Length: 352
Image 1 (spheres, helix red, strand yellow):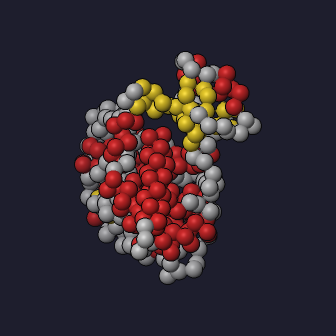
Image 2 (spheres, helix red, strand yellow):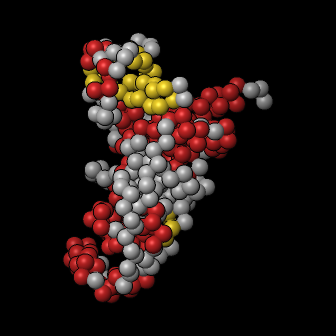
Image 3 (spheres, one colour):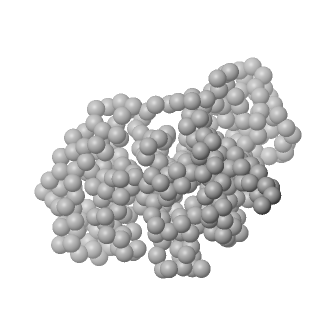
C-alpha cells in the first residue's frame, strides 16, 4: 500500500464550500443570492483574462502554451452550469431534509456496501483513525455509493465558472488551474473527466484542490483515482476527515433541550466547539445525557415537525462540516452512519 503525501492546505472539498446539496448531483454550488444567471460568452482564447491565465500556467507550472490554447479552445461554455449556480437556495427544514437521505434503501445499500468493501474500510479505519460507518455514510450521501458522480465535463464547467461567473470567478479560476495540474499529475485526459456542475469529481465528490491535497493512492497502483478505484475513494474520504481532526469513537452530537429562548443568542456562531458547559446551561441548554462539564461544544438547532430541536455539537460534528458547511448535511451524515451501523450489526447477528 502506497500513500502519497500531500501537505494539507486550507482548501476544501466541494461539499465544504456549499450550503446545501442539489439532490440529484451529489454536491453542487448554490449561491446566496437570486441574481439572474450571467451569460456563458465563450470565445475564450480571444479574452485577455484567459490569456493571462495561460501566461500564469505557463510561467508558474511549465505548461506548454500551444497545448493549453488548444485545450481552452475546445472548452464549451455551459449556460446550464450558470443557471444552476444562480438559482435560489432552497433551505429545507430538518424534518423535510432528513427523509431525503435517511431512507431504508440508502441504509440497506450502505450496509451492503460495507459488506462488499469491508477490507478497504477496515484498513482505512485502522490507517486514518476514522470510523468506517462515517466514510460509508458520506459516500452514500454524496453519490449514492458511486452511482451518481455527475455528468458535466469538468473542464467545461470550470472554464465557464472561471471566466463567465463573476461572483466566484477567482475561486473557480484557481480550481481550473488545480484541475489542470491534477490531470497532468494523475495522467487523466482533462477533456474526458466528468463530475458535478461545480467541478466535483469521483465517488466522494472532491474538487480539484482537495483532490490534490487529500486524495491518497490506497490501492498502490501509483495513481489516485477517485472515479474508478474504491480503495482510493474510501481511503481519500477517510484521509480528508483525519486531516480535519476526526477523533475515532468520539461522539458527534449530544441531544439537548432548551428552556426558553435564552439560547438564541448562541446560535449562528458556527460549529467549531467553542462554547463552555456553563455558558450553555446559563442560556437554558440542558444536555439529555451527562457530558464533560469541562468540554467545549457548539449549539445546533434544527427545525422538526414539532418545533426546534437542539443538540450539542462535538469536534466530530465540526469535522463533518469541513466536508459540507451545512448543519443539515452533517446531521444527515451522522444519523445515516448510525443507521447503517445498526443495520450491519443486525445482519452480522443473524445465523448463517
